[in-house]
Image 1: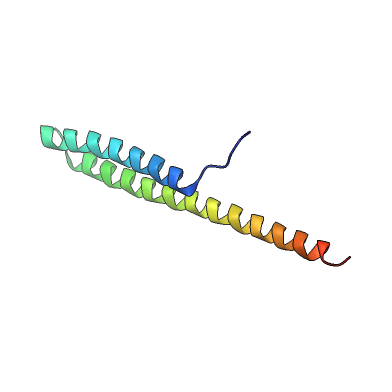
Image 2: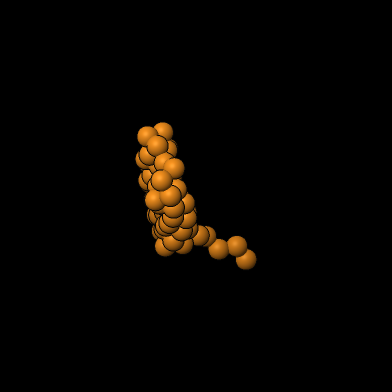
Length: 81
């Protein structure tokens, strides 16, 4: 049976992505080969990670609200007989 992904799992996945990218950027930065373009790329990647995390949370919230709405409709429909 397929089970929904829990918000905690999405958070951990996003955190792992962030740590992997941050580690790569830190290694490049401290190797001395980074330049202004690379710093700009790092900042853009960080913004993208934040947006991805926010989008995932919005999807979770939307699905949760839809589920609650459906349950409420079922409850009210079943209480009329």
